[in-house]
Length: 364
Image 1 (cartoon, helix red, strand yellow):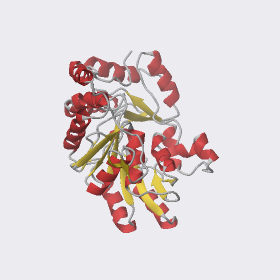
Image 2 (tube, one colour):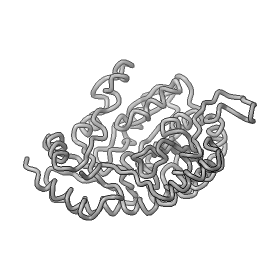
Image 3 (cartoon, helix red, strand yellow):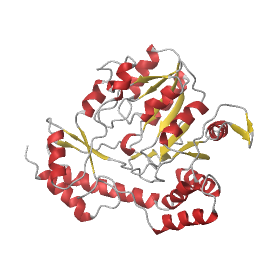
Image 4 (spheres, helix red, strand yellow):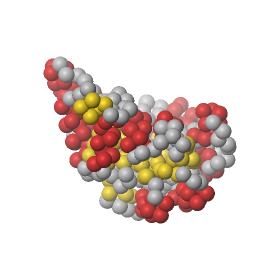
């Protein structure tokens, strides 16, 4: 079986975990501080605040950027539900914009239509889906024109770049996940990156009970802290992430080359000047063949998956909140056709050839 995802954990992770255990300080401490410094450096950000997961990173970033109950926040419906749920956690209202049919990222034109119509929009959360950066140039133009906070959900996009700028450092804040299947992992974990010292300071307080001193609290905070045990894994992963990213890109290039002549497959589109880091290698399967192809691949020992089979506004939670179908037709169509294939750094040349050969052997 060729797995869809495969975390890479080795001797270095074990060495650092043992160091933490031997130190006796397994909660937050110097390993967390070192991980923050390393992740900020590799991402080319001034500040990094690591936390318990990508969802708490999003929640923290929104709060640190001043999002309050009653505010409206625009985001994409074609992503994992944590993105929009983090808006609900703040008492704010998600407004869903449609996506670009080629990149699957939020469409700035759809965002502007909403901005022209809706009042009290305080923020936009763009999602660098599958590891491909959003059109940050157009979003920054809209930010300047309409005066909103821009938060990057980069939970799938470690080291991705928009025109030589690392994602997560372009907007007001960037949020990352270190879940087990991400491009780098701490098991669970997350981070808020920012170049704004105020957002950094507030984020640091929010994740730690609103502390200004050990037993001094001047705001409502939460326990979103990361442990030294998780951070130890993160340090080892930071040492490898650049190498792993290059391998993902190389694997994706081979897949795209091998599948370019398959009539029912549309391989990932990457605009000029963008660096896609392929958290997922996601193809569009045309002619209504997606589900049949997925079953065929699994029957032939190739892991694959759908990211995501349903748009957020059609989830039961959001239907119960009053969201209607057909809000974002481009996203709704994509949800019927996308399929993710293995692209992780552990793939061998033989694995990639097997994936290509198996897909070419699929009979419509």
